[in-house]
Length: 606
Image (cartoon, rainbow, N blue to C red; front, side, top):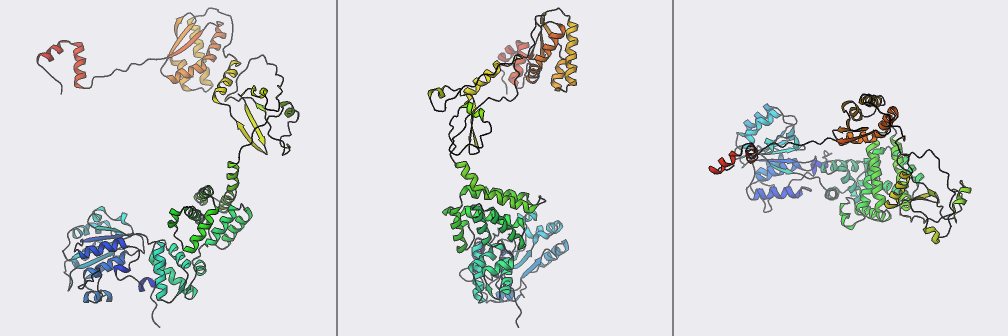
């Protein structure tokens, strides 16, 4: 019985042409070999399983081949190629930097570099996982890497380029390997299946390629696992069952339930997914990806972004026609918010179920938003007041109820002490007669129809008139009186200080309290005072407090002619001379003879 060799080793590429998905790198290396423009050091970086070490070995074999083919590939038959393929070449050395990362290991490598190649043109050193070298080992390697012997070539490979010192990067030609595309990977798996006489389904190979996330080695490992599981028959169902992947059918089915606003079936389908051992976070992430694919499938220009088989692609195109763009965008946003808050939630299942219920009602929200608003039809106000509780019991044939609602201000106004008698309600004709046009427009009209309330907002001009009318009836904040008894300045200042203490006890702002403690009113005329504040903020604070302080002073001193006003202190900015000309003008203003001296000697400024 022959020993089993995994596909990742058995079908490892031996030439540049057989490398999968890295044509931009293989073409560059072949041209460098043809034109004899090889660098002394290469750095191959990229994700795992994309061909970095494989390309390094192919490059090492090709540059020492004595009989290159016209397309730049190694012949595979010369002594150097056969020695490399048998693993006994003395001119190719591989070093695993993960386990040989000390300074002594690098010094030993440097000692080997001094020995020239045997029966070959180059001596190649492949250092894998080079980012694992210590900083001291990197420093010991710098000089040799920058100026190696003309026969030495270094090929470094790493998955984490950011961990390598910039001084190492500057001495290498850097090649960035891409993740292998799903189509390329699925095609490579199909070729291996044909060579091994394994039956397969394209949908199953696409699932393997997507699960591998760009790494061909991972895809080949999963391929071997499924071949063993299914007995040499790689089907879509066998892949789904073996890799524990959520089937496309679940996502297509639950999307149909969401579009049909079927709450119960959506929750039952999610419960079935959980019962099969799938995580809620994995489900909601896959649902977001499904909505993304549906959105991509709505435009012919973006269909190429769907990395799925043709059969699944047709299902996406079909369902994308049934889902609107608004629904898909809103559902993606809901799923994304659920994914973000999933791990922080104590009831994670509820998070997903709540997201599904929100998605179920998206269509109703869109229909309500696009429905035309009902028109307002007036009803006599007297009839509305006779039956205040009959709004909900209006028959369907009855149109809209209109009523007048007074304007509400941000703060409740203070009205006169004499209460005004309420006006008798004005009858409103139900028809749109000319009398209806005379109805004042500065009111809010509330329309109630089938449980939906719409508000008509008056325009800005009418609203301004409305505010003016409300302010006209607002009570004057200043107390009225005819007393004008004399008072002394000491009495006035004592009351001024007492009012400041009262403000501090009430917890008013420190800026307002400072006005009464640090500013002394100045007498302009008998009973007329003025204070000087330092900024506009203090002026505003005093203006707001002015009615209270004047009422306090007037009633206590029994003199209603007292007035106190505030003004902002004018500050003048003195600009100092800066340039040479400004300094000269400043000195010449004090001593005009400097001008004569300047003109006499014809002086100028630099």
